[in-house]
Image 1: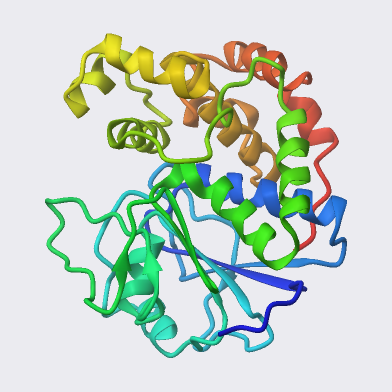
Image 2: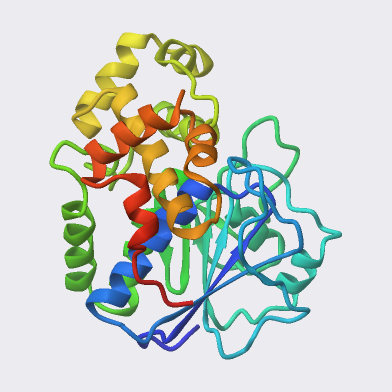
Length: 315
């Protein structure tokens, strides 16, 4: 088990089909941590060549995955997306198989499947989402949890993409302090507009159907689904869907979905060199003008202003 101390370096590994939205939610937590408490915290992102997200067409900026992970990095986040079987013949799997178990390992969405397959969750309780149509069995040495976010010693796992932020805050609570995690939570909420629903009430257990809808939203950014289509895909009425979002997020499905798309657009503006028009199209907006209007209403500044004054980053 890793000795509990404040981390100085964090490694992030991108798996094929990872969700950009969940990566953005985690990076928001880590950057807030840099700004408030740990200015010297370093973030390093690794991926195999040409690794792409399911919800973004181009490879994400990252360092090449080394043949063995740096021993100086003792805290790792493995980013996933919609559930898919790990490729046991890939270089990524071989690297994880040989990685030290005496580190902190965090699995987001199907990132947990990679950790489980590599033996890095053996003897731990973990939240692992394996859909019925996925021909893959969880190793018997892992105690499966039904919680959205599960923390067992130095292993952190979460059920889906929408819980990446909560997993990051749980990690901060464990390695820094619960008080700091609460401070970061408040800080991140204060950055948003007062009516922003995307993370209000995100902590805690959510109905399975609501978790499925949230994942569908994260995985259908460029061509958003309608509320009727979302309800039909999970087998509930539109009215039930609206009741869930009112009860758990004090919002509507449409507003919640819009904020997810805007959050992803914000991350693209900060991290990629794509044009504002391309980002608008990639996040499901009918025109750059409509995108700019929604973005300004949500964040208080225009997309072009974000490019002129990017948020401070440490990598």
